[in-house]
Amino acid sequence: MYIKQLFEGETFDMNGYCDFSSSAASAMAGKDLLLCVWNEDGSKLLAISGQKGLTINRSADSIEVSTKDTEGGWKSSIAGMKEWSIDNDGIYVKDDESHQALSKAFTDGDLVCVKVYDVKRGYGMLAGLASITDYPIEAPYDDAVTYSLTLSGVGALVDLRSSEYMSKIDANKATDVAPEGYTQG
Image 1 (cartoon, rainbow, N blue to C red):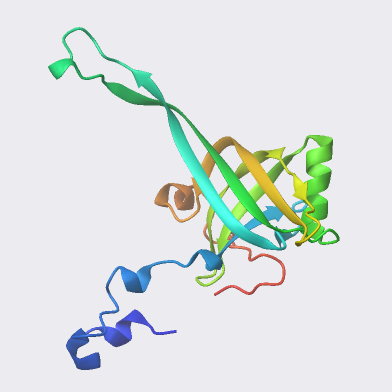
Image 2: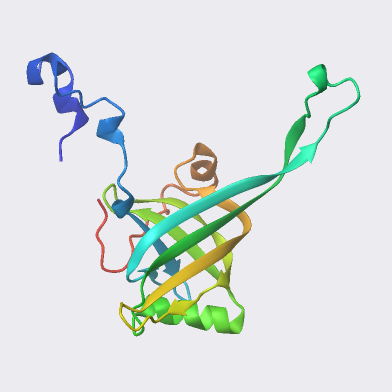
């Protein structure tokens, strides 16, 4: 992995054709993001086994605030209450600890603490408390057994890289725990 400092100044032909500061050079690959769930006692962060797809949904209610004198007859709205959810799917690995934890939480109606982890960069991105609102397992006769998972947020989805979050934690005690089986960075 290249270090940005190597590319500043008179290296690589003055970045004439290898522009490592471009947005493409800093883009993220979806394969590098893992949805993880903490085990029941919070001692282990478990990457959900077999995952293929990950969608992080964030939305806000639309509150209509139009009046008779709204400019040009166009409706006006403002953002109201916010919500988030995560959709995840993949190959079902029945005996994996992550799926056992999810199955137990779903059956018991318990909340789960989740974290989206960037494996390539070695840090958590987003985290929050969620309820499992959908957890079907599909078993077609001619394909692998798969799962899909919908997590509905309870409270805020926390941006773990934000200055607001960083100011709330004790930087001397905080660690960015990697999922079990993965190393940081």
